[in-house]
Image (cartoon, rainbow, N blue to C red):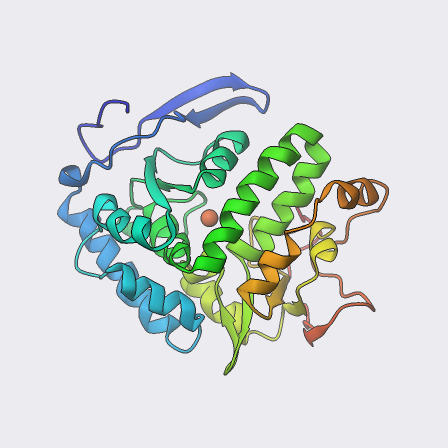
Amino acid sequence: MSSQPSDATPARVEHQHTDKGYVPVYTTAVVEQPWAAYTAVDHDVWTQLFERQRTLLAGRASEAFLVAQDAMGMTPDAIPKFSELNNILQRTTGWTLVGVEGLLPELTFFDHLANRRFPVTWWIRKPEQLDYLAEPDLFHDLFGHVPLLMNPVFADYMAAYGRGGVKAHGIGPEALVNLTRLYWYTVEFGLIRDADGLRIYGSGIVSSKGESIYSLESPAPNRIGFDLERIMRTRYRIDTYQKTYFVIDSFEQLMQATEPDFRPIYARLADEPSHPAGTVLESDRVFHRGTGEGWAGDADF
Ligand SMILES: [Fe+2]
């Protein structure tokens, strides 16, 4: 464990030379959550975001997500203590939350997941950033990602993804691109078909006020049935709401899709062009064909 920050400011290791250029990076160390250092403002940001999202998510988020969040004991009262959540999480699915300073290098991240450790950014956004923040903070990680780790099937999927990530990292950058799209369109921006209709389970959506509504109710985006290879070929947006959301039937479907070895798939996809984020294919199972209204130009990632 590294030393605890003395106040609620992320310990960035500013501007290092990396393979991505001269960029700010975070330390990869696991840090103790500096719970006592959170200010009243920090707790208030959590309370405001928690209450706002839970109100919005009633009838929009997957029942499994809402039930799991309550079962963990997450409440709007104060920023939860990782140690208390871990008591429940470890007993339920064997996962452990570990505190980190921010986004981690890919391989470090995959290694955590493969070993059932979920890295959670310990700091929370400022009051003026309630609606949008470019990088993950405590609210996104804890409110958005952690509840479904209570679900046994989804918990297994996340660990399998971590193992797959370690493997893909060894295969090469193209395999990693394919795999990252799977994470993006499921863990971050996935929709699920519940008994009562389409519901949200992706953490990027559940932690966003605007996208919680847009993803389900806007006529603009496509909503298409989950298809592993199709997703691995599809580019995505990092700067706007998604042009396409992929819909799973169940978490079991996700888990089954990730059971085969991806090596032959990566080899096949290496010779195929990728699809733009907003394209609908003939072979797609279309729940809704997007109108494309308000879409930004071609800047898919
Ligand atoms: Fe995330």
